[in-house]
Length: 476
Ligand code: 6PG
Image (cartoon, rainbow, N blue to C red; front, side, top):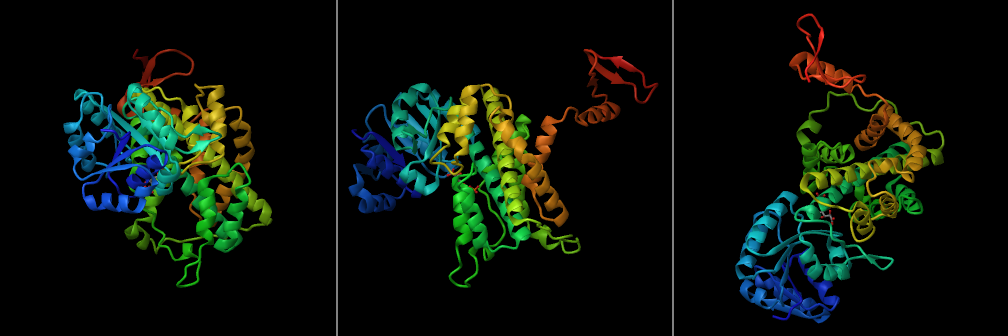
């Protein structure tokens, strides 16, 4: 075969990725389970480059040049397993299967092992940027063997988004590492979105402004360190009017947020690894609460709002919300990078966190100017133990924390739910506390279950005889 690369699964993401490759002068073999999609792609976009369509998977594999590279973009789960099996049947040793779907990283680890046993390379590549990103340049996070990256990497780098000539694609690490970091990317995406939503709620209830006026406020924040894709689209959404009713669109959309699962995976993984990603957790649970019709409609007997927010100075209030958002965003990213490090430690991946921040600067949903600062922080110190305490971030977050305290207090008094803002503040206060009440929990655990405790003043593991004479003994 002669095609440089192949794409299996020609729904919007797959079709756009194939077009992006073709526009970048690669000849692209394409295959879809039902041939109609393939025909549509060729009819509508065949002129954009060189496509090699196949109606049959054996022909598709045969049309690829060796070592063959086939990207699959089908539904996560059993559909992905089925396609891997079909490809593997026709492929030869050294060929490369690339899963660009939103796969669960443990599935990717399993698939990589199975492919390796058959002499094939399996690459789990996280890809972000939605439909437009796939076509115009996404952010790509590939995990797999270094050998497969040597063949595949240059093509992915070429089609990815670029910042100052640098691609938003870099080798992450082995097997599930790419999908792991994509999962955390999505978790951070959830946190970012929830924080923005809380900021909107505060502005709306505090200022009594219309969505269009709040759109202007978000737009003005594009000129600050908050500059990001999600802030930008927030003002676009808020400015949109419903054609039918003439109301702001945001006021006619049902207030129940959906999720396809990557946020929940992030939280589950964080629980398994014991990493407090509280911002992501609260964001995921907030979507759950919004989509709990039973509980929400049963809440009538509960008393609602106490006092509305008394805004003394409009500009001061807006700036407080902005700073609260910035501080909480730093917390959410700091937690997300902690989870990435914990995953790397657990699964034996070497992940360069600075490089990762670099490839999130463009193409992906969480793209933001702010990621440049994270790249620099990790460039200065790759083993940075706490991102938010980095010498660049610490002064910035310290400066914004008083505003976050004000805002959380406003929300508490006015009865406005601020799960992400308040958990960010609690995390900040917790992580910097000289002493935590965890000592008391250790005492309680020792009381009811002889779970023992450590002492601040001596080595050793201790237990108090709570049900006898309450003397202390050293257990080891
Ligand atoms: C991306 C996005 C994408 C994800 C959507 C929807 O990086 O392009 O993360 O992969 O599917 O964000 O996710 P939810 O349906 O869970 O909100």
